Image (tube, each protein chain N blue to C red):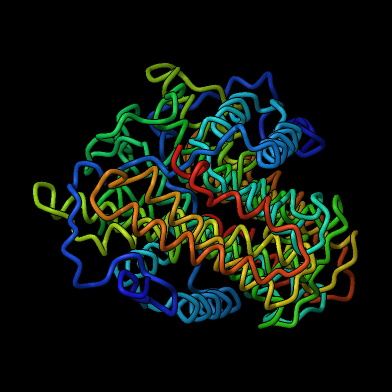
Length: 307
Length: 307
């Protein structure tokens, strides 16, 4: 297992730097942020429904309608991500109540939706996404730009308000805000998008270095899931050790999702690498002795991941 | 005075709905977010220098350099706004220490910088800004889009961290986050940008209704300043009455800035309307008996405003 993994900032890295596994760039550029989840999993489906209900209530179509109608639409039109559900699952695993993590899960969904909307914008210095957009383009680019801009602060507003609505501890809420800001900002998702853009511009016709692909996947999906799991554990009152284990689990689980549904899904060696990550992920949660880890573990189960 | 003012949501509205004062649309579309401040005012210059120093330390050019270099650049390249300085001034007026409001002032500057960067993006469904951009375009549109996306969460991160760096009260920090999220999001600045876009699309060649212009000014500059002043007062430990008075002061002061440096500066009647707003603004702060109100009042002084 260690053979296929190198480390980056102490975290497992899917590809060794000497790997010769190169992926074609055409499958890399501007792919939509990952996502898929088996509807057959009642536990996950139930969480997803709860998050959706919460968000629909949080974003009513109100005045100004010209602003809130596209906001409502874009919040739900983004490609599905498992990160918000993982946030709830982590909260429950450490003994917290679902309501404690609901605002954080909703905020993560909103950040994902905003990033997704901006990823599709046609700008003069980049080409239109080569992959078919996963999101129906109901509004024009300017509306999607502004709506994305409005969604992000709204996510933080929801979180700040959870201090009252869910009687969350203010220190925990502020810690979660920092987590989400870092994961979705310049050191997280935005960094991944940035690298993806550079790859697309600099190496349009050539082979893309696999380590770059792994970097993009980890930044865009891995760290979002890592943040989601850590936030759930923080809000649920988990210990520092539990928070860090769940953060690592999220990193592996998210990167798996990135590898399977984003780029190079059918590339040689990907399945093996995913298996390695899966083993690492399961090792993180199996230490939760005497807890029901079946539900959260199912996120990396083969039948779920390889749909 | 009441003659020229109608109210909107309980707030003074610069234009009565029956006004016949119409402004040409060419001076409206995509104007940069307001800003100008007299360098001759030592109090404001001193605050500005402090905020700039704080931000420069908060955004070092670090790894990944490709992300942080444009972030550093765009944070300072935006047209100047008086909102961050007003945040500090409000904090000091209610007896707080400058350091308590420094993170909030910095966050407001960052939100302004991000909105400003996104306002200049060339999109396929809108024309390039007609006014000469106040910001030097050092980077391509994609970089500016992503950098703006990274700046916003970073602003919230700075705020969340002020819990520790400035020993701020967590309840106050969360309240300030909600204030900033609302003022800069879909019900504030983004709403103003949205309305501005609609005006530019629907009435390109015709006269623009003055009430729309006032709406845009109030949303884009008025509410940002209102939020800034309220946040400063919250963090400085002001009473609810003081917070609301300073919020109103900020709304008037910001709208004045919007009227003078954005649109219709030379239009007939604007100067008179600004005078009315100035009187309202001064009335809000004169009730701070036994406090030194000269400094904060100077923000709406004629020699400062009419530079």
